Length: 135
Image 1 (cartoon, rainbow, N blue to C red):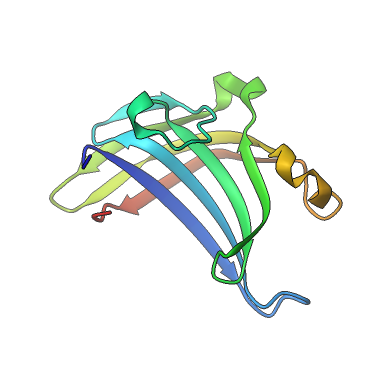
Image 2 (spheres, rainbow, N blue to C red; image 1 turned 180 degrees about the horizontal axis):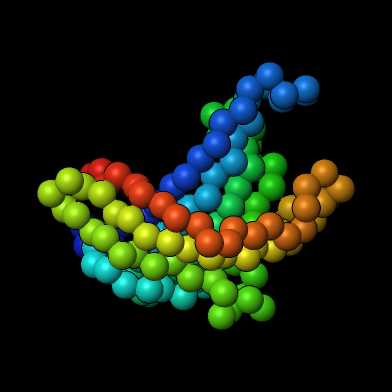
């Protein structure tokens, strides 16, 4: 069991949207080590923690996350602007803090949904603080 890496998940929730019972957006950063470092963000569709590639994905979900209606992966044409910087790792307080910038493009699996969702989405000058919990 690996315990020297972590994932950061950020979710928004919305209810009572017309035609949707429950709607959620989630931004995930994965394969981050428990030390301050700046990581370039790449695509890592297998979520393989042993390859050392930090990755990010964005998804839009219905229900309790059971149905993915749109998925985005890192747009690698913005390689100089896709990063996550871990500036604080506090294992006593169990928090990680930092900043990020990420550009995403729709996963081709979801091309049929482009009439409803944008093909590109970006996060610039983002800051975060996440709680470290056992997985």
